[in-house]
Length: 408
Image (tube, rainbow, N blue to C red; front, side):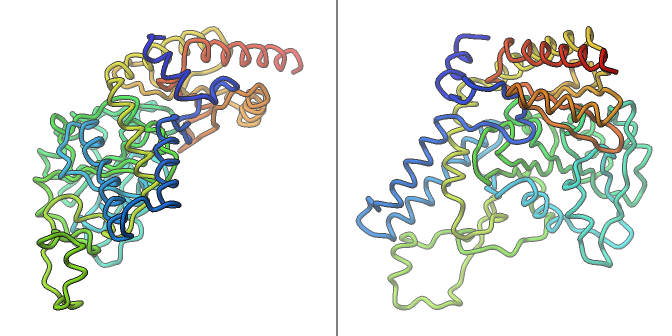
């Protein structure tokens, strides 16, 4: 483990001294920097250090806005292209409401997807609610020709996770994005199982809307995430119902505006053309956003390339160790399609559940996940993990399999 990552593990993640945490794909640990930022904010809420409550509220808005440039840096975007959202579900719901559909249109969704990915489109009101077509996987992978085979002249969008949650397959976003561009399809990507572990560069990859929550690989402790909206696509989206913080600030700022006797509830306003237009536009989750900003700063300082390389080394170690055990690896082995998730199965759900209980007893945290018959014991290797974590998982798993095999 590189020295910088080792120091981050030791200084930022104290819980790792007492457990082997391999479950970032479920909900990750928050770094000390995020906890400190939230604690400082809550202390200020208790004491109100500003001269007035109005000034303090404006300062809170500015603190929340600091998340925008940190998120933009992570994905190669501009701060103006970032909307701050509560979670991935929130972002997908915004996308589903903003993209215009006509009766008879359809969207493509991989059959390995998490329930939430197609859910907002399933709830769109008729008559323009799109048909949802499932794209069949190929042995757990999603080659672009699978999308082409399902698409037709009424296909309007591809909606998918960049990493499939049950087996860790990382899609070729460049190829699928190029397919969408050539067919003039919307490309909506759920990046929650990738961002923070493996990079996504929206300056290179043609994505219209990218959404992510912060509580998985971004290590944020509260309901806070962000959404990228391609500026070239915004004039084709339905404008949202937004709040006052989504309008351009008045001359002199909000403090001056609020004390102006002549204002009325129907005061003329102009909405921002930035992605901020798609936020709720009211008082936000300030603790969650300052925590997310601190976590993003930590990830950006380490470098997404360094993080990805470290995680790839851990998954190599894990796959090599699993090959010596009586298990079947579900995760595709091609390094170009791997993520931080490695899933293996015992081909018997009850035995997998028993193994996970043994791992939890040993303070080794993993998950049990399936979609469309694909899944098993899901292991998440993140930048704060080391080779010793993987070795311990393999040791306990191997011992349990040996003992349970003899018992059978």
